[in-house]
Length: 342
Image (cartoon, rainbow, N blue to C red; front, top):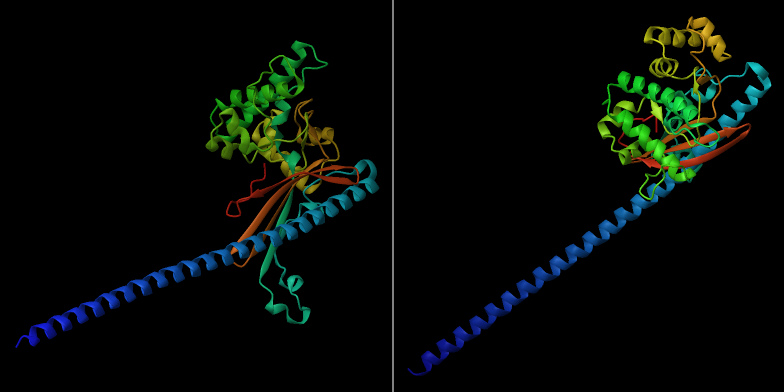
């Protein structure tokens, strides 16, 4: 009889040991499964990062080639203009102004030309925009050297009046006129060492998005984007053959109806000179002094889309004769719509 309780205790102890061993095994299996899942996730993440980096690098190489292609187009246009002599103009009827529709590059990217279908789909699109079809905000930064104070002030007031008209046409906040004017003036003074230069003077913005440095709101920047830009020179005249009617109206200080007539006239035949535009439009004398019919600065925008990824860049190019140089290149948000004014 005494043996039965001992056997019961032994069986209970043995069962508890088995339960503890089973629980320990389950904990170990759970731990291994968790570690394995983490390792798989880390590996998947590394693969995705590598794929994204590879797609980005490939996209940049292709867009660099597209930029060189745009340089070739602008160089050939310069040669064609030189052949025309005094009748040369830059207008929206020239080859550079025709945008490149989204084109499939899979055939060119295929490793095996006989099996182009195996290559990933890649689509390239782009456009070249006349940067002088916008009003250059650098014109507000009137250089002080070589000018009498009164002359500099008069030039500044003329440019400020143009900006006032642009802001009115764009529907932006009137207060941004002083913010932009003072900011551009102070930024130039900090570079040239003018009287108003100081240690806390703002930097010169490269794009209009950087106008926020002066306190301009993003909402006002978006309203001004179709009409203004920032080019690395001053003054830069507006190309009457490519500018919008709003920019023509603001710079020439004429009504929108007259500016619209200018746009319709140039669509039939591009103007060969600013006096030609003035005569045909019937505008008052001196209205088109801030214009030209040729272009030196161009925005080149390219977009490459591969599968579920997209890379987009914009470059500012400067053309001097047959020489076309890239002033700067910047990555863009591929989800954004085109922003002509930079």
